[in-house]
Length: 159
Image (tube, rainbow, N blue to C red):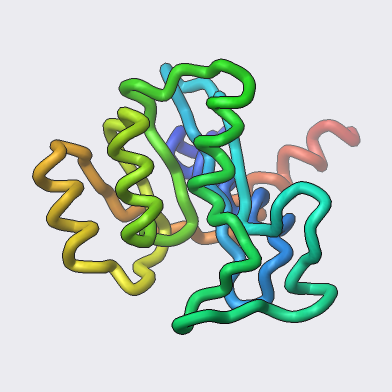
């Protein structure tokens, strides 16, 4: 039986998390992993109990939706809330992190960022990641490759 790679597995988790996004401008998911174990996940959405973009539209200031917290920040905040150490962990994110998330990722001690798609890759974010020694790797995600593995596996369980 074929198995997906760890990178594809964790990237798939990030894409699943993105399905929970409440922002209508861009859906993003992030998964934090340490020693091949998921320690937190996040998606871009409003604060707990807040108004969601899908309900009332995005609140845009200077071309940014200020109603939402980014997926990367939500994942890092989950670690802080529940006491999960992020030093040396990796983050899998559907899109290259923005400048503000990049700074938070560096401060949290994340050692590597895997991203599926480029998104406004800010030159200063790239510079900060290089200066800080945080590695980045593009891991393109193809949902059809997962579907090809799921269908035969599901059929095998039904027989």
